[in-house]
Length: 161
Ligand code: DLZ
Image (cartoon, rainbow, N blue to C red; front, top):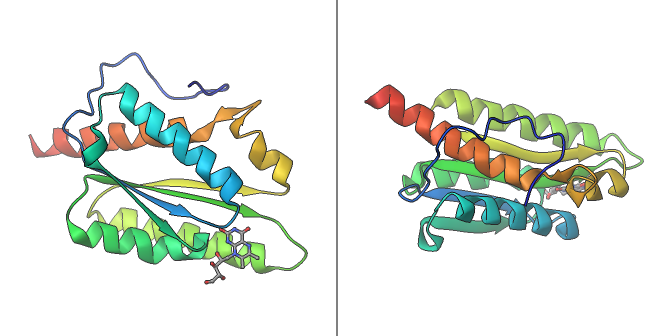
């Protein structure tokens, strides 16, 4: 699966066969988040990640990604976490509060430095914009999230070596 407008370098050799990846997926806008998850899983498999080393857990909405990712990081069972959600603008300011809350809290988890958290949250104005990013004209962003997770695990490992 590829993503059009792909911005990541895929020339470096990447091997995810010994990587433990956690994926936290929001159920809100499930028709979108399921496809992003599919994209992420297929990309992880492409780089050799083992099925038993990928831990997928669901939370109700994107706001719960904060707790889900924090707990997954605390478990010590994963080397990186991909947070997958889709927030679609509605009629009220709710959209802004959820987007800001999730973004800031996931950013804080990254700076806490326990494990890298990949921001796989689509923040869009319409369902169509979301569809075009989970297998439509802009490809499947889930692939980018997976590749980012692999690259960040390598980053952490390089620092330790
Ligand atoms: C309530 C809500 C609304 C209106 N919209 C979305 C959305 O577009 N995407 C999403 O992931 N979640 C949404 N939610 C649910 C909140 O994230 C959260 O689950 C609830 O406010 C309960 O904490």
